[in-house]
View (cartoon, rainbow, N blue to C red):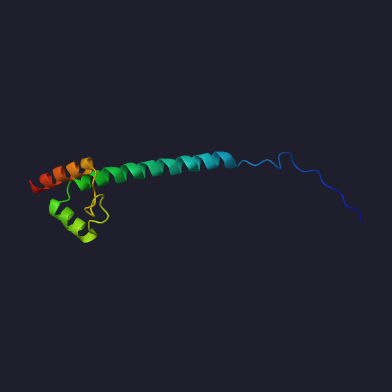
Length: 94
């Protein structure tokens, strides 16, 4: 019995696929979709924030408590913080 290696056709080990190009195309698609989603969410958040009534903001702060706010524990001693807080309280009262 004799074995022989038949000649292979030209270009048998050459692929038409380009994985690096496919990677960069997919990367570009992911980046474009991510940027579009961020822009869409930012514009939606800014337009919705203007529509939240002040009473809803007060309700949310009452539910969350004042501990998570800077200076909310009433131990703030920085004059700038106290001045800013007094201004915001006066603005909220109006």
